[in-house]
Image (cartoon, rainbow, N blue to C red; front, side):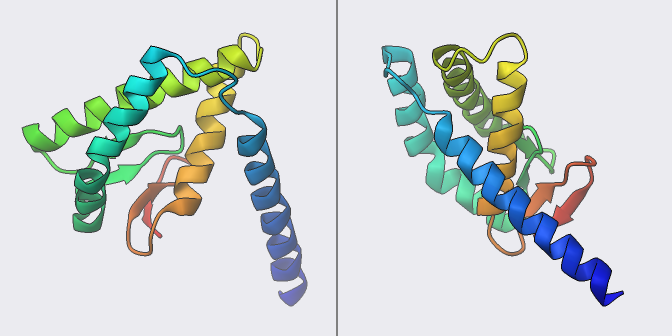
Length: 135
């Protein structure tokens, strides 16, 4: 049993390092007005999103977006706004880094892993299998 957990831990560490390296290699090469708006909107939404995460009303998906976990029109509106802003940024990163047809999906996955890693203890996150868990 201990051998399996040591191997699992080693694989986990390598994966985390790989994810961090992937995210840092996918940068915005040039800021556009659309990206600047998306970043500004995300900054404006940040405290509201953090409060909703702390309440368990939203969680981070495995694809790099937030998801509503409660039925609330106000929550849904903020989630839709945040996800649209993230999509603008992800599309721009994929395009500017010449990642090809599957590049957008790759960026979503990488940033989903980054967001999951950045989640605070107790927040809802979606694992790679699509299951919702508390970090």
